[in-house]
Image (cartoon, helix red, strand yellow):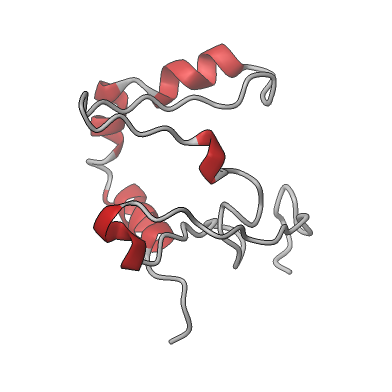
Length: 108
């Protein structure tokens, strides 16, 4: 693996079968980790059963799992600070990294 990583040899888990949700079921929904060739699901950073969608409110709240981070309250506040997110997306380098993480992960 690449040297200099915080976790150069992560534990990789098997992907679960996804629930079908409207038209997006045909889309490759994997989000790659920027430091590894694995998806966030394979690294257990995210899990489908921890995601709730409220189509009626069209509102997104992002929170880390309770007890999963030493500074949970601070991380949750940063994740949901809409002005901070908007400002971050004005940084071309960060936008490129986000685009790369969201790029399809299937074979070329």
